[in-house]
Structures are given as structure tokens and as C-alpha cells.
Length: 359
Image (cartoon, rainbow, N blue to C red; front, side, top):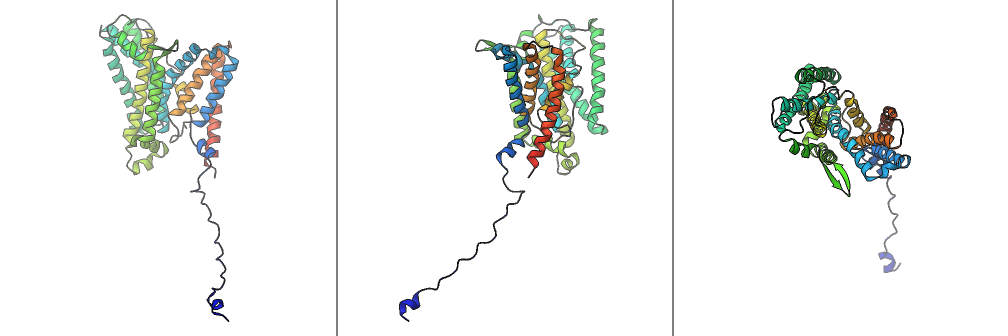
């Protein structure tokens, strides 16, 4: 045997590959579709697009810029209140007094300014204090008594409804307040709460801008701040949240006070838009706000939702409300459409949740 033959290494068999690494379903990256469906606002966004496309064909006047500006205005008056209501629902509660609280705020500012001959800004400030106090009362009663928010806020709803009517009649001798259009500070307050600006020859209400600003702020708070984590935590499991140091009492009360702030803002818009307030209004609006939040992906059980979803939910309300008129249909069908949208949204949200959590 030659030396070359002796130096040649023996052929070796490569090691058999081990079993393929199994992906754990808990850590495997889910498909993009499922990740998108996990977002609470995706379903309502698709629904809003469908409603918009439908009315673009069913009601040609909707295609006009002024009509769309009017739709956005109607949506904004609902959406501004739907945002804090949605945050409250994510926190596991809801407020049945939100509708009449809007009127309470407007009545307070109007009567205080007119009857005492004050600058309207004094009425605006006092109305803010009253609205925040109503929210604080709801939250404080909830955490101190342990009663469901349905019962607490139903009581507040009845109290405010009676006070609105009784006090207005007692002070003004009528069911509506006197006009404050010629009082000091009215023009400045109107510019903040109820003015319009022109875009491409179309008049757009300032509430549309406020609506989008509040939505962006609420989204940032929910997704980027510790307070947002607290909101989701108390809505998911209050006992567990308290066990890990979440200030449950503060979070609950502050959420109700945010609803009070929203009621104040919308109340000021109504006052400075129409110069006077009807004391019997507001009843039923709380259901619209809650429905907009539910259609936007918020669950009545709490712990789930977003601030963007209610924006699309409010837009759907405004689109249907005005689209029916532009289409020349009987506006009495509006409530029927709302019922269909609400049930449809609940079913879609249920399907989205099940699909998003399916492995």
C-alpha cells in the first residue's frame, strides 16, 4: 500500500439531521390578516367604507362637498362624546347620564350668564366645574358602593333630567333659556366652540377639527401612557389590576370625569350654535354614544377597544342619518338602520375576536 493511499482520510457519513424544530403556537408569528383582525377598529372601518360607498350611489347629493361637510359635522357632535364614553367602556363601565349631562352643562352656562348678567365665559367655567362634578359623583358612588354603573348612572340620569326641566322653568318661566347672543364674550366663545372655516369653498364646522384632535389624543393616551395601561387593566380584571398596583379608584373616577368633560364641550357647542337651550333635550343621546362606541369595537364587558374605532362608528351614524335624508327616504327609518348597524357590529366584533384568537 502506498503512502498516498495511507494518507487519504476515510469517507465519513454526514450526521443525520435532527427533527425539524416545531413552532410553538404561542410564539409563532401569526399571519398579517389575523393580526389586522385583532385590531378592534378594523371591522368598523370596513363597515364605514361600505356605508359610504352605498350612499354615494344611493344618494347622489352625498358626493357634493357641502353635503360631506354636513355629514362630518353630524358625526363630530356624536364622536366627541363617543370618545370618552368609549374610554369608560374599555375601563369596564358605562354612563347612562351622558346625554342629559350635555344639556345640564349648556343650561348651567346659559342661565348663570343671563340671569346674573355675567360675561359668558363665567358661565362656561362654572358649567365645566358642574360637569366634572357630575362625573366625579358617578365615579365616587360607583367605587364606594360597589353598585353597577348601570344603576348609579341611571339614577343620575333621572336626577339631571328632572333638575334640567324644573330649574329651567323656575328660573326662566319657560322650558328654554333666553338667548345670550348679545352678551359679553359670546363671539369669542362661539369662535372656540361653534365657528366654521372654509376649505375649498366649503364651510366646515370647527367641531370636526376638535373631534379629530380629541381622537388623536385619546389614542396616544391609550397606547403610549401608563394611564392607558391602567384603563385596560381595570376593564379587564379590577381585582388583578389592584393587586399589581393599579390605582383603580382614581382610574374609574377620572374616566367618569372625562365623560363629564365631553358633555361640557358638546354642551358649549350646542349653546353657542343655537344661542338657547331646550331643557328637555338629551334624552336618548346616551344610547347613541354607547352604540357608537360598541360599533367602534368596544365591549360592554370592558378591557377591549380603541379610540379610533368610535371615530368610524360616529361617522357611520352621521353618514346614515344624513344619507337617508339626501336619498329622499323617510327619516323614520334612521332608528331601524341604527339597530341593524348595532347588531351587525356586535356580530362582526364577535367573529373578529374568535378569528383573531384562533391558532
